[in-house]
Image (cartoon, rainbow, N blue to C red; front, side):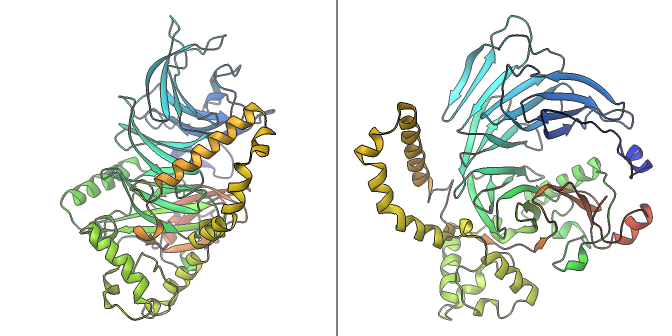
Length: 498
C-alpha cells in the first residue's frame, strides 16, 4: 500500500459518506494486503460491520445489517491473526462476536448454546444447523468491552472493559488466564509488548499500568496524564539499549518533534525487533521497553521500562525502595540511591531527590505530580472519608430503598456489590496500592493537539498521531528529519498535518 499512498498524498485513496450512523473503528488484514487490494473492516455506532476494499473502491459485505446480533456501538474490531476470513468484534453491550467473512448473518436473531463459562465471562456457540454468523459470542465482564488486543503470537486475547478489569483469555481454548483491576474507573485501551511478556493499559484513572503476563502481577504505574488515557502503544523499534549502537530515541525537548513522516510500516523490521528483544530477555541482558500514550488531555507521553523496574531482585527490595522515597526527602536515609531514579517518581514532596537531576527531568516530574484530582490518591482518600458517613446513612436507609422500583433496587444492590469487589481487590497483586509498586514518570509529556487524541502508532522513522478534530500528524524521529524531508518534500516544516 506504500506505493499507492506515496503517489499523491494530497488526495485520499477512497472517500465515503455515511448517514444515520458513524464509523467508530477499523482494521485492515495485513495478511492479504497488497498494493492493489486491501480488506478493510469498519465498525459503526449502530452496530453494523462493513467489509470494503478502499483501493478497488468496492463494498464486499455488510454484517449485522439488521442489527439482529447486537444493537450497540462497535467499540473495537480486529482480524484474527493468521486468518484471511475470521475477525472479532466488540460491542458496547459487553459482548464479543467471532465472524467468518464467508458466512451470512441470517434473517432472524441467532440462537445460542453455552460452550463454556467462568468468573465474569461466558462463551456461547450458535445453534443454527447451517453455518452462519456469529460463530461464537463472548460475554465479558460488566459494561462495554472498550478494546481488545491479540498477543504477538496470536494465542492470547487481552480485553479491557468499563468495569475496570483487564482479562486475558487463551483464544483457542477460550479459557480465562488472568485478570487485573484498574486503580479505579474503567479501562479504555490495551497493548502487548513486542515479546508478549507485558501488557500496558490506560483508562479513567489517568494512569498507565504495566502488567506482567508471565508473573500475573502489576509491575509499575505511570502518572503523567491529566485526563483519561485513550491509547497506549509499544515502540517496536526501541527495544534494548544494547541492541542498537545509536538508538533513535525521542528526547524531552520541543525541537525533537517536527517535520512530517511518510505513513508506512515495515512488518519485517518489527518482527526483527521482536526477535532481538526475546533473545535479550532470554539471556537476562539489559532490557529497555519503550511505549507511548495519548489521552483526552491532548498530551503525548513517552515512557521507558528498564530492567531495575521490570526485574527487581526481590519483593523486599521493592518495599525498601518505596520506604527510601518517603524518608530520603528528609535526608534521614541514604538508601534512596537504590531507587530507579531515572523513571520512578518519588513518593514525597521534598526537593532533595531532585537536586542532581537536569531541569527538564525536574519539570517533567512536577508536571506528572500535578495531575488531576482523579489520578491523585490523597484527594481521593479525603473525598472518600468526607462522604463515607453521609453515603452510609443514605444508601442503607429504609426510606431510600423503599422509594425505588425493583429494577432500580437491583441496580443499587449490584453497584454495592461491585464496590465491595473493588475494595477487596485493592492491595492485591491484581490491584496493588500506589505505594507498593514503582511509579513511573514520563520521559516526554507534551501537548500536541487542541482536541482529545485518539491515535498513536509507532513506525520505523516516525510516529503517527490523530485527534478528534480530524488532524493526522506524523512526528519524525531524531536523525530522520532530513531523510524524511527529502523523501516527501510536500511535508510541512512544522510536522503537523499530513
